[in-house]
Amino acid sequence: MASRDRLTDRRNFLKAAGGAAAAATLAGCIGGNTGDDDSSTSDGNGGGDNTDNGNGGDKSGTLTYTRGSGSGSLDFQNTTSGEAAKVTNQIYDTLIAFKPGKTSLTEGLATNWKVDGKTVTLDLRKNVKFHNGETFTADDFVASYRRFVDTDYKYYPGKKYASSYGPYTLGVIEDVKAKSDNELEITLEKKYAPILPNLAMFVSAVHSKKAIEEKGKDLKSDPVGTGPFKFKNWDTNNNRIRLEKNDDYWGDGPYVDEVVFTVVGSNTSRAQTLDTGNADIIDGLGAQSSKQVKQSGNAELVSAAGINVGYMAFNMAKVKPFRKKKVRQAISYAINTKAIVNTIFDGIAKEANQPIPESVMGYNDSISPYEHNPEKAKKLLKEAGYGDGFSFELATFKNPRTYNPSPIQAAQTVKSNLHQVGIEVTIHQQAFDPFLDYTSSGKHDACFLGWMTDNADPDNFYYALLHPGVSIDKVPKGQDWVSFDAENFNTLNVAGWANTDFMKLVEDAQVTYDNATRKKKYKKAGKLAHDEAPWVFMDHAKDLRGVHNRVSGFELAPISGPFLRLVKLN
Image (cartoon, rainbow, N blue to C red; front, side):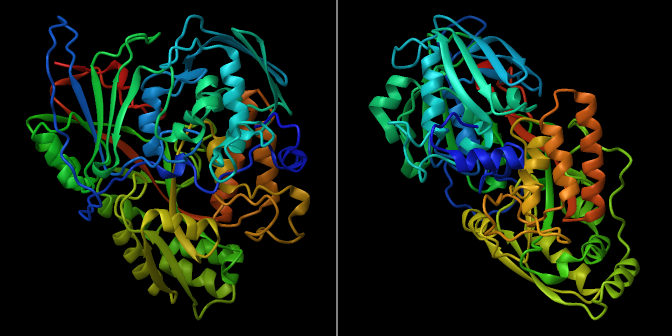
């Protein structure tokens, strides 16, 4: 959140709205392709060229990681894509890290840290080298931070280049100082509970100060970090990124000579690539492709409960009927989310009833999903003055996502369910990038969307997705929504929802360091969100990976990762 000399307007917003200027499109909501749509955009074989270089028990070689989509940039400050993060997480390090396969924090480039009110102090690791040979110091983080959020900084790359994740993740920071080469002091504008997990997010990684000054925007295609792998080359025509082992890496690993990221757009084709040995690890799996991996004698399906949510949001700023709670509740009763999750998503997800999954602090286990009850839906519509029904457009992405592995089938079910209660739905399908532009600008009536957390903190759901970004006193009295053109509007809140009781809860939860107090507030926020129904709560999906039998040491990471430095090829 930013030490900027000339950002009074944004700082005022952060103080009023709780400290997180939200992004138009964030990695948390992007993630990778999943499901079993065979409409491939760019297919390619993994090219498993693994070799044993004779290193005893720690076999080396080339590890091939195959996914459904490519990366648009290799500068973590220039992207909001989870696909980009999969690669940059191999090249760069953060001050604080997530433990592999866990949501808890561990040492990264910082070996010790302390939060005292509005001051965060960190002791930095010594003798760490960047890939360009420079020694890592506190000045590198100061430069990385300023490049991301300080428009007065000489090397600030411009608002069109620097992603909106900067103010979202680091905007509550008032100032950053290098106390010495190996000590940082971060001053916050106010107490801010998520600051440590925010420092572990991929966008909080550290650039080389020298690389910032010498390469500028060229870092998007020529990255320089301190991570376990160094950038080697990027074949953009074939969506192939090749990284090589960093022999000077300060931590555990890496145990392979190279990592190659390839793209196979079709999930079923990707599963076949794994089975034939042309990929070592694959992600983006849906029901059918998961079965393919399970049935393969050459690979294993690895799964874990995902920290995500899938939902259908009502755009209250655009559609008048959605401004009535009874209408939103009626639609929630009319849509058979249980059938969507159990039949269409076919066992790779569970029904949702609130914004966060049960693994996140503050989950309210006293809430139940809306039951499928068309008669109750009709009754509520009549009470709301819409007994004769109405019509709206449902915008959806075409390709499957982790949190919605079959979006078209799910949309068709929604259309059929709502037709039974007198509401007519038109489905508007789009590719994902234009779909995100469409929804962030408020052009939709209702839309499917979802979120995969960046740091497992409840704030990363509640504030990021459902706080409108405006201050409470700017919400018109008697109104629980705001316009998308409101000043400082959070475009991730695609419902335009602005319930001031909810806003107060999540703002208060941001500024307390007592977890027991935070839990209580988030439980209340979850109940309020369920009852007010700005979304139809759909599902929490599993994380799935296909792993070839020759791979060992792979940890499925609910956040951060993939931790390819720990992988060995046998």
